[in-house]
Picture 1 (cartoon, helix red, strand yellow):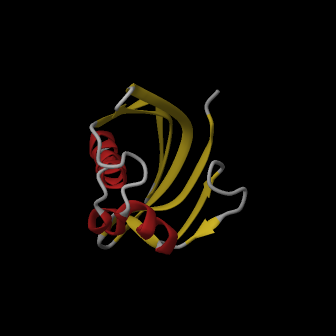
Picture 2 (picture 1 turned 135 degrees about the horizontal axis):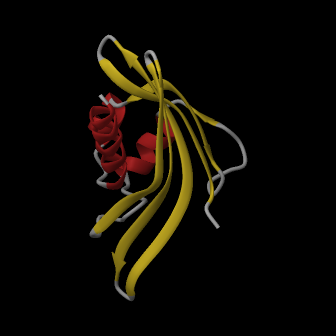
Length: 126
């Protein structure tokens, strides 16, 4: 089951970095609560803000990328899974490779239709 959960998370993350809103919405609960320190110091609720961001492919601008999850940890409590890791995003840009590291926690709940992310918290990784 642990491998299945990490595969779910990877699918969810790739949807963000590949501009695939359909998959993002399928793997994210509509009542998402999210803290992204680099966007705003306030909580963002729901999918509307992220629909715009994902569809505009803001994270990679459609350029080649890779993601690495460092110091991965999965905590499972029944129908709740808590992922914590440092996400290392590497994007190929005109001047070379750009790296960005962010500490993330994502909470997912298993609903009848499958796992969905319900809460995300990001903080600086350095």
